[in-house]
Length: 394
Image (tube, rainbow, N blue to C red; front, side):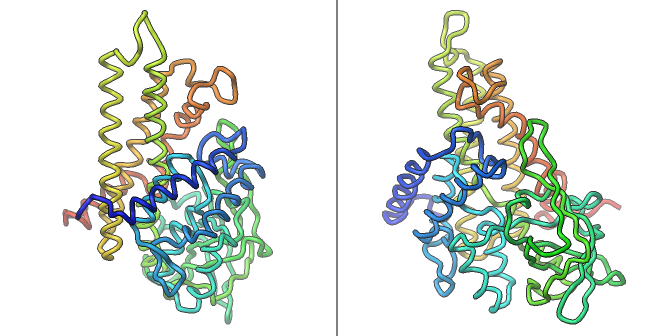
């Protein structure tokens, strides 16, 4: 592929960076990190403000087919992600915009596309994901929550966990065992549901820092309409694989590291130890250069994935590779920044906090991407099996 941007792409990049720079000025004072959008009503209101600003410009539908209101292509979407990541902005629902919309385009019925895509593009509905269970995480096919069909409805019972933003979401997409007697991978159905439905209970799982991002979701005789099946009944595993590819190739948060590295370099230039700027320490220079080089590699990888998506050529292996590279880079950066800042890296919301207090937040959460969306061990198996054709261990 040609990594050089066209004049139109350069103009689009300039525009999204300009709009995001203006929104950055409206951030709540307590905003520290992307997940602040889920922490309280103030963070969620800022998320919705950004979403409306992006929606009115059509940016939540970047890369969609024109018949569904789409504009631009996947490269335009990557440039939009790059600007949001740089300014650490929410506004593009990670579940509705980044995951469900492309899945609907690939596997949804025409009726669902016509009903749901406009609501996602206009930032009317925000989604959450009801996938993992207490005993079914990376091995999602081992789930136990059931969806028993009765006429035009499913009666759903079970428990879901690690549901990001479920306490604010309007709707959810989930996968449930719909045929207890069928073979594994052919016994589950992918269904959309209203989070205000009777029988749904949401309970928080607070971080050790007190932040509220994850939730337990309990489903007790919840009625879900068969109208909202994505794909075919009992063949939800195929839809899961489609959506997982979009989830794992989501690079929004990684782009925030570009600004993080810039601020870390500025800190090293301004901070002296033993009478010399940290920027003159060869070990510090080498470690920052290492992460910076990896960041450039991620950017090239993101551009390549966008090119593959434009040609409908992205496979499970490609998404798994992005997920591994990006998540392990985020962990490397979290440890690097904490090491360099020392005691300053342990505080936030304080006059003593450096880099806006983001280092404390990043260090505490940098392990999460390695575990979420399917552990990196699982991703390496996907690359081995589906990408390289290696045999499975018996």
